[in-house]
Length: 442
Ligand code: HEM
Image (cartoon, rainbow, N blue to C red; front, side, top):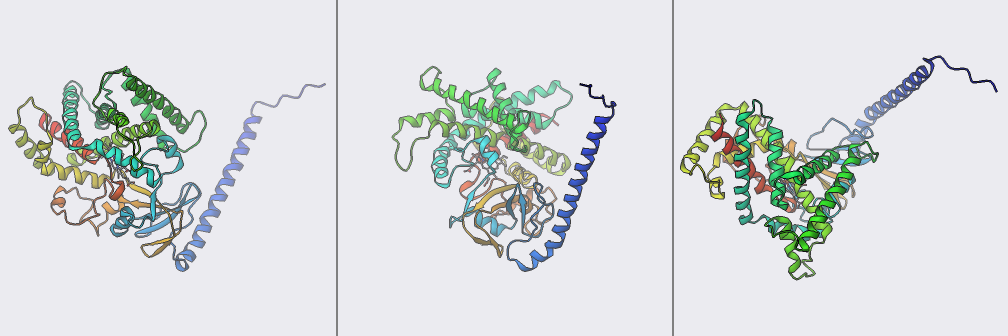
């Protein structure tokens, strides 16, 4: 048999190049067809249907145009409606008639777990939230403030020796340590580092395309979740067998419930429920708060008049306290201006920009028909930056919160039955950070 003639070196590349060009051309033609279709059908749908305006969107990427207080688009093949009026936010978040349920996309549920507060069914959510709410008592917030203050003093003290400080990185170190210590008494050492690393991978995967291939961020996040579960299972088992000394943390409180009688209305939490919700609280608490702190420092740097006013308030407080004592809950209640700075930062940054829900039945929103099964997203960022809701919304102006009378305008922590459970912890971390930064550094 004759050997096959060897192709010149460039030939395979040329073929590859042709294929690539053809594919690109095909994709381009498809894209143009979709755009033409969108353009042609757009006006038609808007004028006849009473469903919210918006096109079907391009597959996968949805659309970037927004139409007033309510528009519709398609993401990953599902219909999403975005709503940005305070009245609709109130109706959906209060959910008095049970028309809506919370719904995250499937990939997020896989990462935080089915038993997580974020993904649990309505009935299960009520039961789990009942258990978790007990953890956020005034006593535990007071202990939390003391612990966070010690952490801040230690971390900020370390900045003296460096030339540059990256606020987001530093804030993330603090919030992660604060959450891990509060939830499961992990303070330092390789165990904490390992957990931080695994949690970071899960957080990254939540923003990634849900492709389950070994090199993808989503796959790596799922693997990290498995390792976190093993760490927590080991910890629970050791605590149950009395190997670990008694610890005053959220995990221990949840395990102590084992000793109480389980009733139909309030059954004990299973291990899976405990694990998924410890992971949920780490994720929900650290990135959000670190990002809020970072935005707050940026806004203060850009608004020196606000910074000056804040400095006066904080230095006045510092003079009253003994230099070695930790901040207390009472101290934080004597920071009215700083509290408004925190609130205004959260309004302008909208760290959690929208809240996902699903319609459980056909209904109406903003005069438009909503079909059962559609995803409804409350667009908090648009409400926070709506000039009809806030005067001069792009101006950083803490005193706008002197008037607290209008409800459902400030949605940084959500509202209704799904309001952020860690709201007071987050505010406390932000206030303590402000106090220590402003009274330590210029
Ligand atoms: C600045 C920081 C934070 C912001 C902006 C924030 C924002 C939010 C928002 C908007 C929601 C409700 C979303 C919805 O209705 O769909 C939420 C829920 C939640 N947050 Fe936070 N959060 C922060 C910090 C924390 C912290 C420190 C924790 C600590 C445990 C935490 C735990 C939770 C939990 C467990 C939920 C789910 C509540 C439920 O579904 O019943 N968050 N958060």
